[in-house]
Image (tube, rainbow, N blue to C red; front, side, top):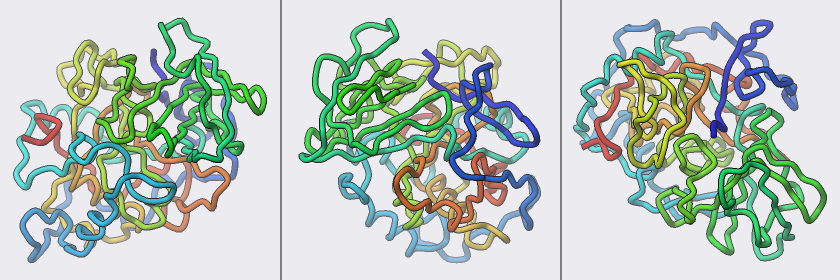
Length: 363
């Protein structure tokens, strides 16, 4: 299975998702122009400021930012906290001196040649809906013959306002605060108020490590739950991202993966391929607050990349993209944070200073 993004450029706009492989492209729900040349972006390889006096382990030169990030690490609720166990790969802070992957240089160069990474927010983002004891229930049928689908044969709480992302990935994520699960749907469709279909889906324990409870793997290429690493809308409002980010790349290795991945849908046989499950990190010595022109959203993303890094969980057609929650039935926080359109490429983040880590915990 490859529930992942593929990208093409049409009319100056980069489109990511399975639709780019030949299916129809669904317009964004609201206009989101792509800005290819925002002002004051640092040039690749340019020297970047280092923090003058930051405490040990502080990656951004702003101790208050690190403290603030740690204040958001409570168990996930409707609009605060984070999912999965504190000691999971997604929530483990990298050490002050993490060990580089022996292939770090070639791996990173293979996906960040242009020093840009696109944000999948709207068309191929990840809508997240929260269910509680009052949420109505529905049955779900999985249409792909990939074995026993964990969503079938039971009633699932699915909020009435739930609907999939408009792109062909058709993603839906339901966080059930009663059962303490995250159920992910790939290519979901609402038949009626009590019945959904989806190509595939799984459920993971919100207090576990982000992998499916049934052993079938999550509805991502790496077999982890689709909620893992997603930048939530409330995190963007608070400008705090207390976990590793989720990335996908067109250079995911074939036949090679690492924890927390349980499998791979990669097909690259190049020597510089990136295994699914591999962890990347932005150089923690850089003072991102001092980067000219950096937006509040880019700053929050950069700090998360320094503290927690990013984990490759999918194959894609673009060099590298990051997963964001699609805002549905809520106020969109991304424009105010400076992420001004779908597939915004976050040019002020110094991507050329990203390195590959040897293991999931950086050791």
